[in-house]
Length: 172
Image (cartoon, rainbow, N blue to C red; front, side):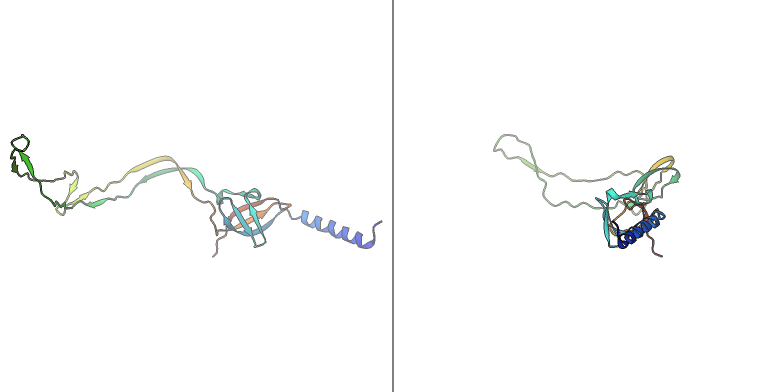
């Protein structure tokens, strides 16, 4: 048999459940404390793991197709002026080939050169500047994944089993 106190506790519990049922979700704020595996600390009370999190595209890396019509910037003016040093003695022996015979010593000259094509000015600068055009439909990766320290806004599912990570918090 229930006494008055037990009846009052049961009524309060039923009333709370009715109120909670009328609130299908709650906003929460959290901070990313680990990227792999993903963990988010919610208002310094609990830590949510990837099993409890549902991510929106706003907080993930993703690929998207875009139409482009672009020309790259000019670049690559390079100074090609340089020097080479040679330190040593070049001796070439020729003449008699008998072992122990006296060979003749003669000298060879050393030369070095480069051939460059393109626009070369008097200061030895080579103009390698150029641009590229590209157009059409291209695939790009948007690097939008969460990082440690990111503050996020979460939407709690009715019953509190799952949390939808909506986006990063932006402080103004």
